[in-house]
Amino acid sequence: MSRGLRIRAALEHVALVLLGLGGPFAYAMASPIYSSGDEAAHVDYALQVWHGHLPVFEDGLELRNAVGVHPPVQWTSHHPPLLYLLLSPFVGPLADAGHIEAAGMAGRFVMVALSVVLLYTVRGIGRLLVPDVAGVGLASALVVGLSVWFVRLGGSVYTDTLAALVSALAFYALLRLARGTTPVRDSVLFALACAGCALSRFSLLPVAILFAVAAIVIGHLPGPLRPRHAWLAAVAAGVAVVGSSLWFYLRNIALTGNASGGHPDWAAEHTSRVARPAPDVAADPSFWTVMSEQFSVGTYPALPRALEASWPWTLLLFALPTLVGIVLFVVRALRGRGDRAVRIVLLLTALAVCGGVAIMQILHTAGGGSAFARYFFAMLPFLAPLLVLPLLWLRGLPLVAWTLARAILLGLEIAATLARQLRGAQAAIYPEWTWLGFGVAIAGAVLALAVLVGRRRRTEPA
Image (cartoon, rainbow, N blue to C red; front, side, top):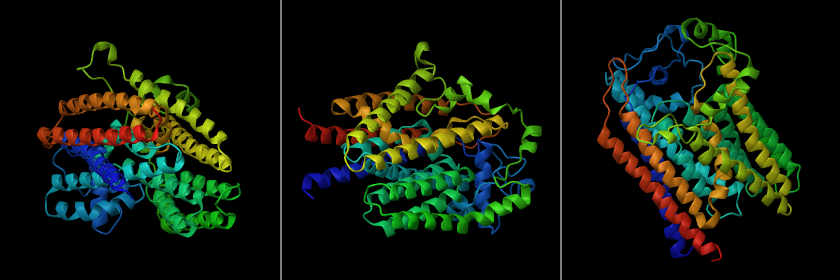
């Protein structure tokens, strides 16, 4: 590797780390710990794992947080335990020592670290899914790192960041398998990532199955992956999923009567959520408007009144470039030679994951669940390489404009978070550290743009 390539690779790593740390850290500093009931319940789950047992819905929380929201029941007890195993060594000792708020913040810092790993995984997906376009990997990580939900979820103790990470890792392993270069090693990674899906969320079980089926299909298409290696990966994934998580879903059935572990009767009695037919939810434009807000959320008083609505930003920063990118990907795949069928299957797999996420959220909302845009965040690692394809035209100038728009919106979103007025006693916030984190994120984004624009100037004709 030449000296110039080594320098560019080092700068790319710096950009990814700054971007992955900065935004989530900023939100962790701007939002009072336990200001959401879900966060308190997630931290409590980790505490109970530290104490050597799993939580039970009716038993409530062991965590005694004096600020924020204290849920009346343990409404995250139905989640598989992988996230809480990761959090417990950081949360447990601090909570046991009486440092309840510090325990929650320690949990947030673990999520910040996972956010960096997620960006590296997204970069890997972009590189392998679109290997013939320079810079797609880093550009994909850039757009995910500037997502409002990457920032919010990476700075909060929720399961969404881990769910996005393990499903992205499974897809990354599938992409590596499709190359057929190290099938045994990639099969191990694939099996572990699929097991991670099953141990993170019930809704990721169909995703793991989809990946296993896709591996088998790819193994029987013209390409480097041999059928026996494809079957090895699929069977290994199935064994890993069953061996790692079957016990937990049997426990859910024993406690609640269903594998997902939900308590719809309690929710119907104690919340204002109302069930409605799934077709009504699917046909509701407001549902799609809210759920698609991956790069813009709510209104920002600092913006001109005409720009307060979030849907124009969703259209310009998300929907339109993604649709154009899908068309570009298909055109490039059909122009390819021996691997065109494999590339189409990989695209269909990515889109099927997104469709599955949407269907599950429709059913969840129809059953009286909440419609939060964070549930669609799991789509972004799969869509990011497609989203950036048109943004890399004209030597990356559209990507520069896209990043500038997102940086401005992100600053407004962070300012709005700092200005929130929450009811009841709340933990402290740290504005100076918040803006430092924002500055770190912007520095990472600028450095990523510099690497991308410089690379394309060297690889494209004038």
